[in-house]
Length: 160
Image (cartoon, rainbow, N blue to C red; front, top):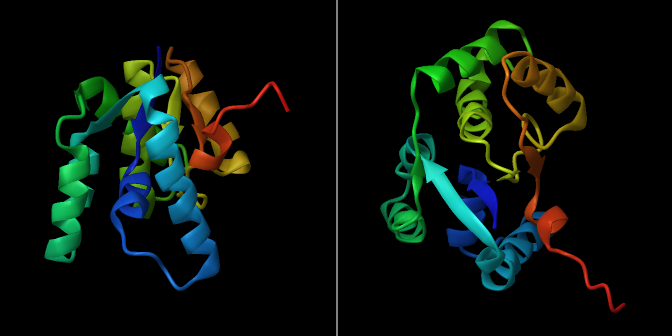
């Protein structure tokens, strides 16, 4: 079974009330469809970074996010992860303000996860940035996870 690291934006879109913004609402719907139809095909996990981020904000939303992540395996944040995340930022692949994004990528890479599922298209699901990050990850001896949105991991119907 392939593995998926669920980054915080995925959890947030899954837990949030439907947005009036059409694009966000579409992302929320795709996220819910992925969770309902596709998650059983993958071994899903999170990290303490996800739990920390999901634990901030409106209490009702925090409760919903924590209900979703409860029971999911938690990948470790160890010295390999912190060193790789620091290198991603130090090399300029991500800005210092996106250090937590570097942690998500490092957790998934060190754990050998197949996919990192996110709606963060600014710093993670961004082709230009991912090329820079991948060079660092591979140079450190790790495999870069495939970073994508839920829409990209909906599977295919080979009968169509």
